[in-house]
Image (cartoon, rainbow over all chains, first blue to last red; front, side):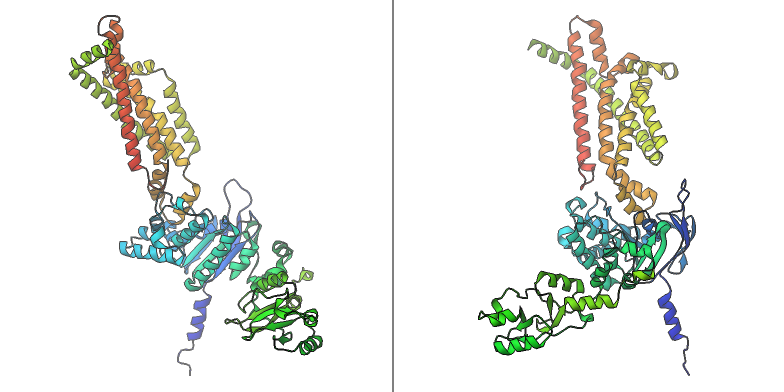
Amino acid sequence: MNPNPQGPQLEENKVTTPKISLRNVTKTYSGVDQPAVKDLDLDIASGEILVLVGPSGCGKSTTLRLINRMIEPSSGEIIFDGENVTNSDPNELRRRMGYVIQQVGLFPHRTIAENIAVVPKSLKWPKDRIRARVDELLELTGMDPNVYRDRYPKELSGGQAQRVGVARALGAEPDVLLMDEPFGAIDPITRFNLQNEFLRLQSELKKTIVFVTHDIDEAVKMGDRIAILRDQSEIAQLDTPEAILTNPADAFVVDFLGSGAVLKTLTLRRLRDIQLVHPPEITEQTGRADAAAQLRQSDFPYAVLLDDTRRPIAWVDQKNLDSSDSLDSNSRRIPVKLQPEDTLQEALSVMLQTSAGMSAVVDGSGQYLGTCTIQSLAELLTDQPVDGASL
Amino acid sequence: MDGIRSWFDYLSSRTDLVVETLLQTLAYVVTVTVAASIVSITVGVLTRHNALAKELSLSIASVFLTIPSLALFTIFIPIVGLGFAPSFIAMFLYALLPIMRNTVAGLDSVDSSVIESAKGMGLTPNQVLFKVQLPLAWPVILAGIRVSALLTVGISAIATLVAGGGLGDFIKSGLARLPLPNSLEAIWTGVILSLVLALAIDVVLRTVGRFSNPSGVRS
């Protein structure tokens, strides 16, 4: 009796139709025997960040550049929005795909605004629309348009230049962004910020992004899915970061992930995903003997000292309780309070900084929710081991 | 002091001739520089993707510069006769190399990442050339044009030997009449006016550079 039985199915088809497909693509450079990319099949879903990662020379950049035909494939097909673009006008294709490279490549003789306006201008947008779009993009990428609009690229720092690079790539509202190690030449702190800002931006924009990097940590952080490539752009494994880290396909992937793979899973999990534990909670008003009894009965070496508003202040052990000093003057104060949105990696680093091996978790208003311990992290990791035995 | 006064007397009694020869030299500089610029920039642009063609054109232009000027001015007389034509051809051949070499160097100096990003944004090869490569290479090309213009002022003095006119006329007549009266004054006229002309052209081309070099780029 369903009047439209195909409805849901159509909906599903729409979701699963890839935004970009490479079909059996091979690229052989003239004068070289081995192809740089060999028989590659790759589907990129609409709205995802697909990271291509692999050792240098594996063909990841070549693969990216095949998509906007900066490099022409020797054979195979490139499908974009269901349309075979293998032999279409490459310049028209490139104007529909933002392109960000490591060296940015801003035009030094053009202002920031003129740089961002390049593609809208070649698409003959009206001037008012271009001006509004430039300001919008500068704001989106965290640059004050009134300050930067009329400056020249040489006046920008590396991080600012790449912000403009991203703004320029987004110029004519392309659905697709191709990014070739965009944050590779930027210092670690700025890179960290740019990555976070870019992820925030992407959560609003929902572009389809192909992102090349050689840095597995960056891949894990940025990718909705990761394609780990080996020689000739052969896909060793294509999956979500979590699935790859917890279940690498073969020895090559294990090798590429490196010994830090277990630790990397910590960057993917958040405190809200794990069960918090509850050591005894005491306040200044709790009697010392009572507190000591509670601590002895628990399995924990420390109790957590809370203030009147249930904010955690310090970790308190038996010795503190036995001495007559004020409890909040001891050395195990809790300077950093974690929130459920923080990653387990951050939790671990907080634990290592305090001598207690525990970190307190609070809600948005600073009230104590529970505790994360080294043991709870260890249990989590050993429950889902990186299975080296199945190689 | 006497020498300077007699030189001014010499000049003021021949203003028409002075202006005429000065204009002749200026005409050489303008026509030669314009023609050499057009040819050299075109060659530099056309050979930009072909290392062999690039080297070959530069070699040929270098060969012209090694031919003694006296020979180069006279070599075309059997074909084109005396006067403006053989002088123009010789100076044109001399002026090619500085502009061509700077065009090649200027185009080569454009950061490859800038060209890569220009292509990646869907600019056609012509747009990449005219909107990116040539504007960025222009300060270097203009420096080459300036060298060629000054070079032309200097060697245009030879034109007088093939009846081509110009400020060389004063130098030649002075040398021929040494040590008769007014011979030194004639030589000085040729030399000093050439210097003044060269300085003026330099100032003009530097000013052109100040206004035409893209802002945001320091040359």
